[in-house]
Length: 260
Picture 1 (tube, rainbow, N blue to C red):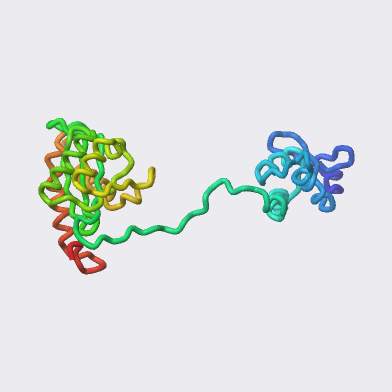
Picture 2: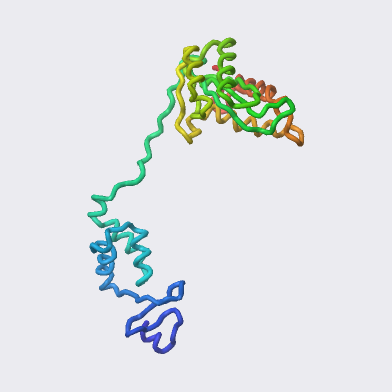
């Protein structure tokens, strides 16, 4: 290669002090390290006390600004992976993924219910901006109501109204919203005899049943509302009736209904 450069110069390569250099993207030239010296270079940039046993990216960035060879990136990765000191002392800065923990299926209706607010939505003609809903985890039965706010009082009154009609649920699961974690709401659940649990923050999958309703009703109501989106609460009750009818019909795969 050196003979070819002497006969036909290449702007990307340059001989400096009888050492072959390559031009980087920033225009600077760095020496190409021969195979016999690469392990020594890697030791100097990783194992030496002045190198501090930095991880892959920092070692690569420091090394790449000063020298080069065709497989430099791959060699840096392999060298650091084989470093026993790093493997022994480096601390993993993230938690390993845990196995999925499934919620135990409740034995009876209203053993476990999930409740949540959705909004703010466009303010309706009736002054409503939120929807509060409760879903029975076993039967998927849905009870929803359009409300003007998402306050603790609204959540407590909704739960009390459901209790007066259907009886108190054994366990109530909500997210960590302040309207559900306030002292007044906890007092209401204790008075009704409910066991109140909260889901993992920023993890809507643990509220999957009620979150599915939230995603569905907004999508469906948008197909019926007017151009100002201020009559969505008129169609909310129809949507819940349709969903309840679907829950009482046979499932496409399991050929039985949710109520069964």
